[in-house]
Image (tube, rainbow, N blue to C red; front, side, top):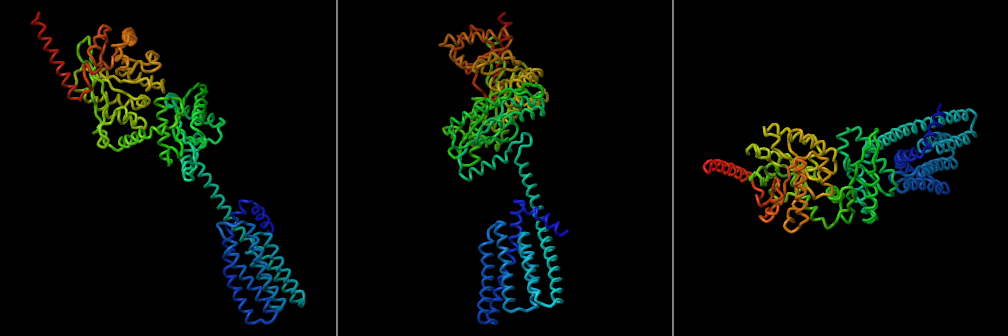
Length: 638
């Protein structure tokens, strides 16, 4: 049974991982044994010095002193470090055994004492511990007990029989001790290896995105931090899918999850050496590229990846399409930390999504100041009292036919305690980028709705929605809930959208706008003519009004083409039963040119600049009074 256990231990022992772990576990045992061993042989050397003479003195003192010195050197210089190799540990154990054996053998050869033959049995027991490996233990025990038998063979048969019995008992005892010790160590090793395996599995789970199987945010940023610590150049890229949220909302999370896995499978299957891809969350991914790549090469890799993932997918019999935009920044030339690098890559991504959708944009160091300003605005958006600081100005929309103001456009303004008056395009863009836009919209809409309730029933309010606003159906429903709770008729509210706000996810935008229109609210397309496909949206979106971009209106005084375009749009809107607003009318000369075209509504400085709520109410009140005076004057003149 002992032999079987030894063979089982040997099979486990030959495993390289177990061998190294064995060395790590066994090294402290050997180092501990060497301390009393060294002290004992120093004492023995002194004892020989006092008791021995002549050749015996020289031999025994030299051998015991050599043993003490060897034990000291082994502990201090050989068996050092975190984990010595098993081979070094085995050779050290063998040397210890041979030195012990040599001391006892030499002493008995010079001074044979029958009573001290038991030392060989004691050494066999010690060898079961210091032998380290099974082969060293067996060889050392065999040598010690064979020498015992050799010495005992010169004694009487009775004593020989006694020493044979001692040797046999010692052999089994030594092997049993060696087995128990190594089995205990191996069990400890197995437990440690299992713990290490479970820890590695846990680390792998903690570092892996469970949906796609690629590294998650934590793993990627650990790698990025490691590269930063080692000062190794690299490119960080942030990739965001265009149109995924709409698919997820329309078809559900199951289809959305299948689509995400398909995107990752396609992206990781492409041949891009040295590129690491991970998922940050949602439909946003992060990539690490070699720092030796040039900006042009990074753009090529990014654009090729976007092209690959933008090819349509077949998911559960559905043909689905998503696009992608990407922003990249370089370490260390564009940022000295992972946080700085992420900010700049994210800034480049936002630029791609807002201005160059479907492309890869590399951060431009010339935009550093702009990015710092955007970050400062984002910080104030998080920390400031927006309820107190955000407010609206109202610009009139004038009807030449009715000769009065029929509505106002609500224009966002922000007076911040630290930044002062922040430009609307700056803080709206920053709010979109930082994910605060719906909070801003909610605050401003609440204020606009409260002001609208104070106006005459025939006056409307036009309110702007961002792309992020109309991409979230739950948020739009919350706005409708506010309208219902206010008691204001939904027909008095008009929501303005831009072409860029709907183009990223047309299907979702259509569904949300249909919901708004079904509630009674009006929908207006702002900046008509400034995009490349404005006429297409006239057919695809549920519109009530079109606002002609001010760039055309400003040119009517000196451009025949602009006059024809404006006249054409007015006529088209009339035929499509759409209201038409001409934006940016500032002078009487412009109005004189536009009047023959019979414009529906005019919005511009000529009929009113953006004004506070009090002035808007006063304008409406004066208008009502003027209208009453006209009505009173009419009978008198008759």
